[in-house]
Amino acid sequence: MISVTSPDTAQSNSPRLRQLGFFLGRLRRPMVHVLLLGIAAASLLPLVYMVSTSLKPDGTEYAFPIQWIPNPAVWANYPLAFTQVPTLLFLRNTLFISLTSLVGELLTCSLAAFGFARLRFPGRNIFFTLMLSTLMLPYFVTMIPLFVLFRTVHWINTFYPLVVPAFFGGSPIFIFLLRQFFLTLPTELDDAAKIDGAGFFRIWWSVLMPLVRPALATVSILSLVYHWNDFVAPLVYLNSQNKFTLALGIFLFQGQYRTYFNQTMAYATMMTLPIILVFFFFQKYFIQGISMTGLTGR
Amino acid sequence: MSASPHPVTTPLVRRVAVGPSWWTSPMRRREAIAGYVAILPWLLGFIIFALGPIVASFILIFTHWEILTPPTWAGLENVRHLLADPLVPISLFNTAFYTLLAVPLNLAAALLAALLLNVGVRGTNVYRAITYLPSQMPSVASAILWFFIFSPTYGLMNAFLGWFGVAPQQWLWDVNLVKPSLVIMAIWAFGNAMIIFLAGLQGIPEFLYEAARIDGANAWNQFRHVTLPMLSPTIFFNLILGIIGSFQVFANIFIMTNGGPGTASLMLVLYIYRNAFQNFSMGYASLLAWILFCVVLVLTLVQFVVSRTWVYYEGEST
Image (cartoon, rainbow over all chains, first blue to last red; front, side, top):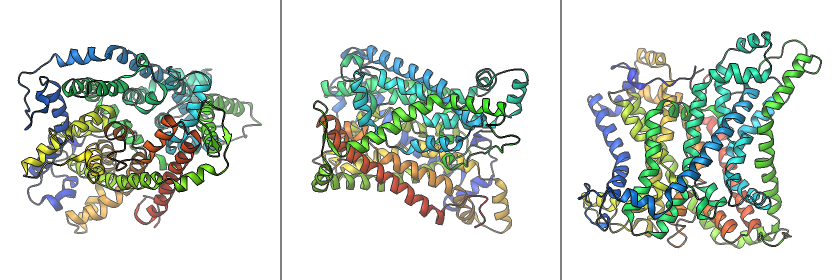
């Protein structure tokens, strides 16, 4: 089965600890803590800096040396960031694109994954290899003809270029991930369903889909984070402000209010917060997805 | 099946066909038709959104097209333009420079963190969450954040250097420091590679360490002769992913430096974007995109060839 065991379960004197012995000397466990603390601090410091700056009164964000604790803490920067640019509209646009794409990806990617994992047909491996090879294709190679294509059908400055590909199995990485999960299920399931008179698509929808729910959760989370963070596609296809996503909004924000770094940081914090929450609640799915596919968040 | 740290190289599972072949048996034929229907949405998407554009993009190389007027045949004119364009070698150099620093350093940080997390001390889940977070931050948010951090007058980086008595630097505004600055930012987001390394480390069976210990291997030898070879496919996978990703770095550059100061951080992808969507030279931009494609392809193939000398796959006789 696909599982990532928690490192916490490792025995205190495990060989894994010994792997490190060569540079940790006799200190070992305390030393591991110290090093991890250092790395965690380096990871966290910029984020703390972001939140701290977001709460500073106008002007003091430029004070040097840095005041880590804002005095006074100006929570009003957050509502201000909401009103300086139409943040709620951007949020609605982002959610619409993310959720619509998610539905498309869950349906068509799982269907293709089912085909690749459970059905035998001539050329299957060739198609599968073709699909994997598109993972290597740089986005910028197809972007120019796609822009021309979408322009011809008058889809520029609409959400169609951002959501329609999702309904055509637009994320090979998700097909791959779901296929791996389908492969772990015993084929006897299909055979039993077939004997009961179920057709192939009935097997996909009613028998196998409920069994790969953890994989669907992984795909959902990776997909939502991807669309939430996506920058290049909205930048290329959306050009009027009322169509902007949150990612584009921050850009506009910065141009217009370049000097108000506290509010910009408040906006950046608000954009990051949902990701942090999703991550803390669904860490398991994130890690499973990343370890299986190497998918990056952007 | 265990969590695979190098999924793209996983061999395809072939189910051996038993009984009549698909065109003589109605049952097999039904299955085959269902198979084609199942992959049909993807296949259409592949043709419309990948294969078609690749072919179109190749044809565009030989045209002049400013979008508003119909395209005209240009033959090899774009290629001639490319050879005379000083910004092409500059952007290639910048991209290579950035990749050469960012990818190995990012992987080294990721491997170190993964080794430490794999020890399994108390609080590992918290450490893992914190170190992973930066890689998942929206790229625009982290770009704005780091733009601020690198500020010469009030930024965190100069404050940090100040603690060690180092003079403040110009960072993104310094021709020599702008690429290293972007590299520092790239190292910070080592979380993805780290998670993949962790999965790889957890796939190494314990008995190998036991066997090595019985043979008298000390901790360094165990790391050198068990951990590293067993982890080499994961390192290889991360390396490929890292290079492909690094050659396409865009949002950070676009937001933080826009290629500056001067052309010091002009990367290939930014130059493609400028040509396509600011100059609307679709033909020339397509040629640049193909250069990117070929570079990434060649680098990946070279790595596959070189990997035979250092990547160990279990089950191979060598």
